[in-house]
Image (cartoon, rainbow, N blue to C red; front, side, top):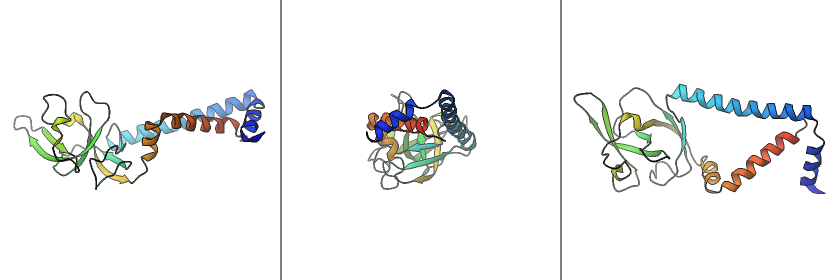
Length: 180
C-alpha cells in the first residue's frame, strides 16, 4: 500500500479526542511563534526584526538569501550604516547603505540618502515620485548581524508557492498523524 496509504489509514483511525489534542498542539506552536516575533519586535524596536536579502544590490557584503537581524534605536543614523527601509507605494523593504546624511537645522531631524553597494547610482529612482531623501519613519532598522544563505528557504517558497503549500500540508499531516 505504501507510505501514503498508511498515513490515510492512520488519519481514519484517529479519535476525536486525539484530533482535538493535536489541533491544540498545532495552535500552541503557531501562537508561540507569534509571541516570539512580537517579543523580538519589542526588544529590537523594529517592526521587522529579521529580513531576507532579496537581490544582489548589496554584494559582495550581503548576498541574495542572507538573513539580516535589525535593531532600531534612537541614535542618529550615520553614513556607512546599512539600513532596511520601506518606500511609500512599495510593499517589499529594501536593504541598502546610507551614503549621505542631511540634518535639518530647524527641526534637527535627519534625512538620509541610500545606495546599494553593487549599484552605480543612489536610490532616488527607487523612492516615491518627487522624494529625494528618506525620513526616519521610512527606516525599519539597522543591520546588526546576518546569517548567510539561510533565507533561501523563504525565497524559494515565495518564488515557487506550490512548495510552500506542499510543505505546510506535509507538516500538518505529520502533526495530525503522530501518535504522541
